[in-house]
Length: 72
Image (cartoon, rainbow, N blue to C red; front, side):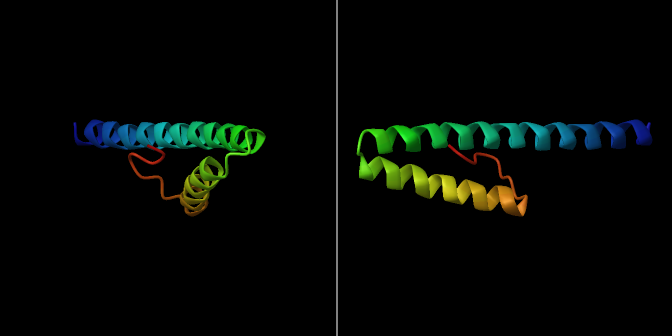
């Protein structure tokens, strides 16, 4: 039973990591689109806001430190 519990725990953690990576990737893609829209609309404030968030997410992604709530 211990092995099954350990396996379930490892599987749960793996699912969590995959989910967080997918959410992070989606938010990065969303921010890239928002940055493009801000540039098209000459909206400097939105451009800087989205660019700052994107830079932060890219730093997190680069260090492999995906945290719950990233991108929200």
